[in-house]
Image 1 (tube, rainbow, N blue to C red):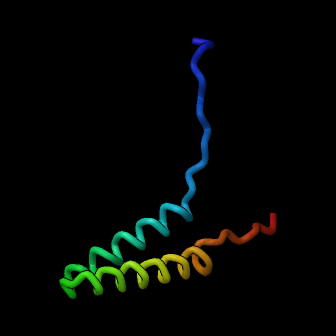
Image 2: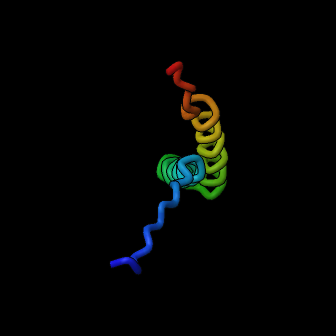
Length: 65
């Protein structure tokens, strides 16, 4: 039992949010536009919204206690 190693790695939430925002932005735009240029535009717009979300809504506030 002592040979078991516990890996306590933290999850990179910012990276996952950026990746998901980019992927879903591209998927939504390819469904709505149907063109490759629309897909590239959707990737860029999704990345911009994900960056905005990570920088504005995600930061943790420090507690007063």
